[in-house]
Amino acid sequence: MRLYCTKDYQKMSRKAAGIIGAQVVLKPDSVLGLATGSTPIGTYEYLIKGYQNKDLDFSEITTVNLDEYKGLSRENDQSYYYFMYHHLFKDININMERVNIPDGTKEDGDAECARYESLIEQYGGADLQLLGLGHNGHIGFNEPADEFVKNTHCVALTESTIEANKRFFTSADDVPRHAYTMGINTIMKAKKILLIVSGEDKAEILKKSLFGPVTSQVPASILQLHKDLVVVADEAAMSLI
Ligand code: GLP
Image 1 (spheres, rainbow, N blue to C red):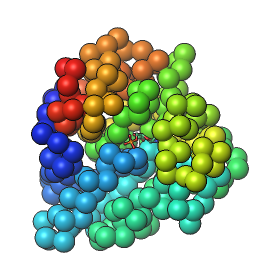
Image 2: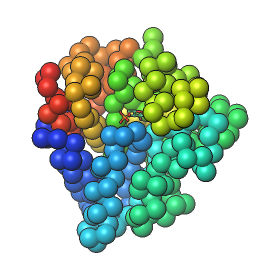
Image 3: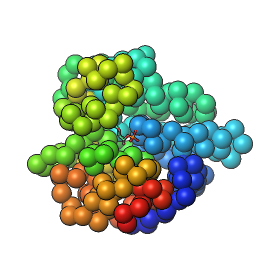
Image 4: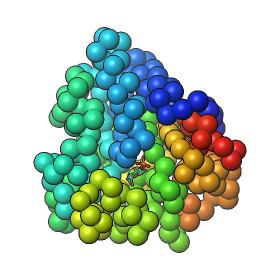
C-alpha cells in the first residue's frame, strides 16, 4: 500500500487527479472505475482542468461506475448517472457510448447485475478504480455484512448510509432503499485502486480500514489485500494514523 497524506481537501483532489491523469496519459484507452459522493468532486474538477489545458485526452477512455440507486433514471438529478454527467462527463471529451453505469430503472435486478458484471469481466476489470469511503467502511454500496458479496448485486442500504446520503435529497424518505453495486471481487479485480479520503469524520474508519482486521464488517478493510492500493488522504482523515 502507498499512502499519501496531503494538507487539505484541495491538495488531496489535486494529487488524486494527478494519479488518474498519469493513467490516462500512459494508457489512453484505459478503463477507469469511477465513484460518486462528495469526496471525488474536487478530483473531477482537476481532471476537467487537465482536459481544458490539453494535458488530458479522454477520447479513448472507457468508464465503469461503482453503483447506482435502484429506481432512479438517468434524468433524475439524484441518480449517479446524472451526478457523473454533471460533475465530469459533460466537461471532457469522453465518448458517452463508452460510459457504463448500472441501469437503476431495470426492475430485474439479477439480470441487470449479471449484465454489468460480465461487461466488467470482458474488460478484465478496471485499470484504475477510484473509491471513496463510507462512514461505516462501505465501498461502492458494499455495506458492513456477515460476508463479502463477490459480484455486482442489489443491496439494501443501511440506515447510516441513508442518513449520510439524505443531504442530497429533500428528505430521508426520498433516499432510495436499494442500489446496484459492484461487488468486492469486481472492485478488487481492478489493476490499481485509488482510495481518497477527506475530513476528521473519516479518521476512525480510515484507520480501521487500513490497519484493522480484514473483515466484511468493515468492507474497505479488504483493500489491504490488493497488490496496488494507493491511498490519498488529507491530514484530518489521517489524524489517527
Ligand atoms: C456513497 C457512495 C460511495 C461513496 C460514499 C462516501 O454511499 N455510494 O461510493 O464512497 O457515499 O461518500 P462521501 O464521499 O460523500 O463521503
